[in-house]
Length: 175
Length: 296
Ligand SMILES: Cc1cc2nc3c(=O)[nH]c(=O)nc-3n(C[C@H](O)[C@H](O)[C@H](O)COP(=O)(O)OP(=O)(O)OC[C@H]3O[C@@H](n4cnc5c(N)ncnc54)[C@H](O)[C@@H]3O)c2cc1C
Ligand code: FES
Ligand code: FES
Image (cartoon, rainbow over all chains, first blue to last red):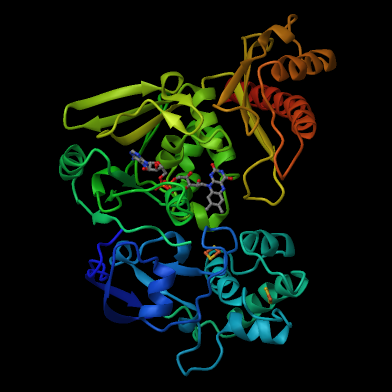
């Protein structure tokens, strides 16, 4: 509880490295990383659904590893290289392989869940460049989609793997 | 769904962290945050101060001692331990159970020690600690002590850690010769908390007869439950009747409860089915390992 007249919460100046760019922002320690990205940095590509780790919409890459942005505090994320869906495009700004695959295969409908899938699959394909349909399902098992029924997302994983193999240099992981 | 305000510290040495904790015993330790942050966001716990241990390099070790066991520090992520080939070799049950801890994304951040300290009887790791007889090393400004799994889990989500104590590492013993293990669970979606999970360890004597059988249970008790099932196999042989008896014996030690995901009866049925399945698999694993050890 803040006392009347002192509504301002104590903040700290932190540095976040997102998609290769360093940002300096003032946040209170309780600021979730997902909120810092969206509200403080204006990177609204990272979506927020459940805010307790279940839905996967907020998934970003932390040092290349898929991580829930709603389950980290911004203040604790300063030492890492963060990559959001905004960092998934090719260097020339065109759609990255995973994004392109979702477009090709109708892997999205409303698009709410999509950023979390894109980041998860981007990292998943780095680890396993040629997943079987079974492995593709496993890769996305921590993300929820209420629209597509997942079939086209599984296809998108396989298509993305194809696109990545065809154009390995045009990587979109933002590093 | 936002946490209440707290003050935050990120020490870089254990000594600093222990001093900070001693000065603020009402503080909480932040490891992976994969259990703590949801609780804070849902305001199910209030934390005036957080001591973030993720910057303490000396807690990031995985030491595998052949014939002894696996020792891992407090900021080792589930994913790192899961991927550790040598740790898997020395204690295969650790790897088998870690495959079922949450989704890969959660495992990238959540720590295994944090999971043990969180002491959720629906978590795989507290059960594994109990089943294998692991120990937890905790430190405070007063010094260090080791806590056996038996003395650690004292209630639902409750351990015998005192305020001011930070868990620094956990130890899980190696799989002895002529022993086998298995783990399986049923969840609504792979990576979700199990409706019921079972791990088993079976030891054989030099002639291949069953010497002992123990099983551990996830999500069907308030604290991690381990049941000795050796008595169900009096002739040292794995029989269908023995497996049935084992399942019934196990149930007398469990308290399956109903929630939105499953009825108590369904959970009990899962415990039965999984007991027979997992004990049989652990027995087969023991046989295969014993053979391999002889020919090696
Ligand atoms: C969607 C989702 C699904 C999940 N599914 C599963 C599952 O199926 N099985 C499962 O086992 N877990 C599951 N988890 C929980 C996950 O495994 C957590 O990572 C783990 O339980 C806690 O580890 P942590 O490092 O995140 O700890 P934190 O959340 O940081 O801490 C948990 C508690 O332990 C205390 N603590 C942590 N480390 C220490 C320490 N070194 N010393 C003293 N106190 C400490 C904290 O103060 C806190 O009270 C799930 C989580 C989510 C979000
Ligand atoms: S918003 Fe982070 S997992 Fe749902
Ligand atoms: S496209 Fe609507 S939730 Fe996935």
